Length: 237
Ligand code: CDP
Image (tube, rainbow, N blue to C red; front, side):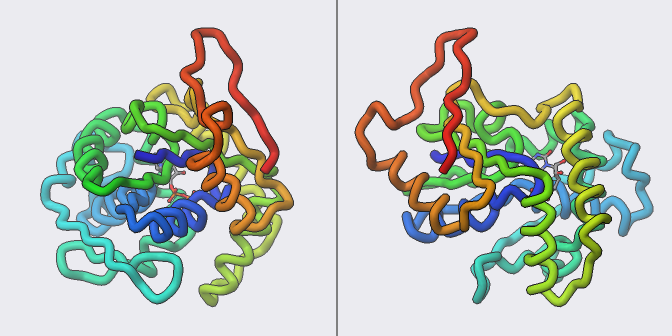
């Protein structure tokens, strides 16, 4: 079990997906589950602030991820291809609104854990290493400066044919950071035994190699269980 957490647009999705592919392991894009749930709530006219009503929708959602041609899976919900809607920036913002609600987080917990199947799982999110899979054998917290993350998001959206303005993207990323880091339930924080990698200025394949080295390298490069109060390891890639 490998947990990859970090803030918005830190490159987790690209790196975690590529790692799962290389290892031939399963892949969990936990953010997509929050996005899908937010979209499902809005489709049914449920306000996003109504956490318990939103959470109650989870058992009705039949969600399938199908490997696509690119580095992202196609997403099917109750037989409908929702890939484009789920990947849109608005869905990310809506996901971050419902994600602050403890009822929503609890409703999605088992769904996420069910992805853990042989031979292994690479999970990407905000609380994979802290809450959902605290016993993961490798926990990585990927970070990058907000400006770099806005540039990456801009490039990613452009490749998907979506135009976005850099100042607005920067603002959006900062807002999402504040909301994700300061919520009382499962805030975005590195697990005490996570390896923290600052990926600013490094392309995805360099980050991927670094994580692979953590998997195969000598034991002193593997994450240790930190004694309480011990500070995180923080490396640049
Ligand atoms: O792609 P990006 O990193 O911007 O977003 P995402 O991973 O799809 O997640 C969208 C939102 O869902 C995040 O801003 C979080 O608020 C929330 N989320 C969460 O709370 N816990 C997770 N494990 C995954 C996502």
